[in-house]
Image 1 (cartoon, rainbow, N blue to C red):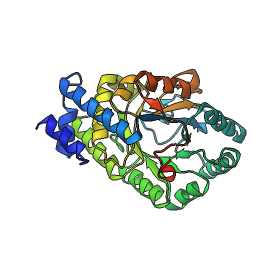
Image 2 (cartoon, rainbow, N blue to C red; image 1 turned 90 degrees about the horizontal axis):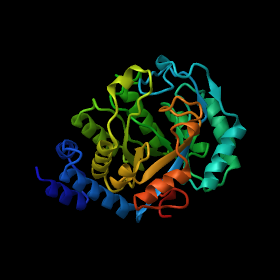
Image 3 (tube, rainbow, N blue to C red; image 1 turned 90 degrees about the vertical axis):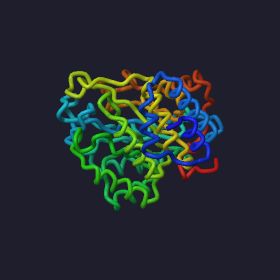
Amino acid sequence: MNIEDIIKKSRMGEVLSYKELVYLLGLPPDSRETYRVMAEAAHLSRRLTDGKAEVHAQFAINFAPCPCDCLFCSFAKVNGIFNEATELSTEQAIAYVRQFETDGASAVFMMATANFAFERFIKISNEVRKAIRPETTLFANVGDQSSRNAVRLKDAGFSGVYHVVRLREGEDTALPVEKRIQSIRNFQEAGLDIGTCVEPIGPEHTNEELAEMIELTASFNPCFSGAARRIPIPGTSMSKRGIINEMRMAQIVAVTRLGMPESVIGNCTHEPCTLGAIGGANLFWAEVGANPRDIEEKTEEGRGGTVSSLKSIFEESNWNVWSGPTRYSQHNAGQ
């Protein structure tokens, strides 16, 4: 298999095959060939966005011990990090969104644990939507939902949903893959954009697993995909598996970009880093409130970056940053 032939295929707008993805993922991260892949992915990301990356933002409506027991998540009941349930007031939620508007985030994600009452989430969301700028793009980050609830998210003013089939779903989590996929279909049938990702990646995941997940995320025709490494939660069983370095992460981000059709404009990574941006990531998230990768109740006092700091990371990577509502959402297409 020849890397130049693969790059030529990508330049012709063709989606790479499973075998080609496995081959690229199997290259040594510090090889000339991997740098070639990263350069090609960065060029493609810049071409699709006119050289302008985006910073989005996310805040948590609540934090609580979650029975889904995703082993990589600080909310997992089994991990024992958060033992009491807490939620924001509607006023606090509105204040977060307004601050993100002022800071220049191109979209705002409202996150809740999978067991958070959906009626409560909708009630808060309706009040938030009425109190913020009409042009502000909202995404929901919630648990699996029925078709009816997907429509209610749309009616509440959300443009899209972040939803993921995680690596080793059903093994490292208590959630079946089929239910995750059905929720994605429900969201899309309701007219919501889907943002997704290949995550959370650890040292144990094989190139074959990663290639399968890249192909799966591409099959959703999302508004953005990408790749993110797993951040170990101290004291948990999964933390013993370790963490991949940023260079390996940048390689996977680049291969994911080449594994997506050009209709998928956004290519995310998390947590933000210059190597990710150099490897073709054009989407980062600022975060406040609870964070599934953090043991702090307020991640802005821990791992969470700000809109300003993430813009700086992009600028250090020679990206310009888009100002205005996200262009990745189909609802904002053509801006």
